[in-house]
Amino acid sequence: MSDEKRFIDDLRRDERYSFELQRKGVNKSFYDANRMLHCPECGTTFNLFYSRAKLCAGCPSLVRGCELARCTHCHTEFPLNNFMSKRSSRVTSNYIESVIKRYHDTFGERPGQ
Image 1: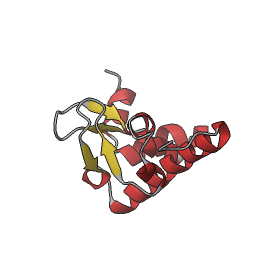
Image 2: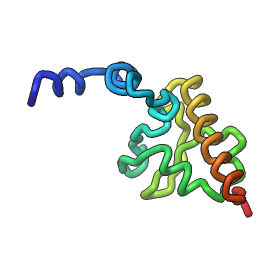
Image 3: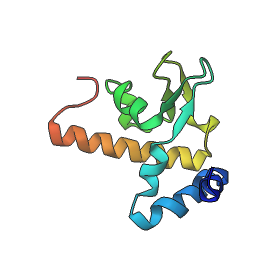
C-alpha cells in the first residue's frame, strides 16, 4: 500500500473531505449525505442517500425533517444521531429533503401520492 493511500485511510471523515474533495467543488452536504452506515440490527452497510431516496420515497415524514435512517436490507429504522452529531444529523436530513423536494417539484411527484 502506498504512503499516500495509508495517509488518506488514517484521516477522519471531515479531514478526507477537506483533503480530497473541497478543491474539486464537491458540496460538504452532498458528501455527508452519501456516507455509508452500518445497520445496528443486521450489520449491512448501505448508503444513507440511497436509503432515504429509495426506501423512504412514499413517506410524508421525508420532507418534514425526519432524522431516521432505514436499512436497505432489513428495513430497520434508527436515528442518525447514532452515527453523527445532532447538528450534523439535522443539516444532512435537511439537505437530503431539499434534493428530494426539488426532484418532486421538477417531475410532479409527491411523497404519499
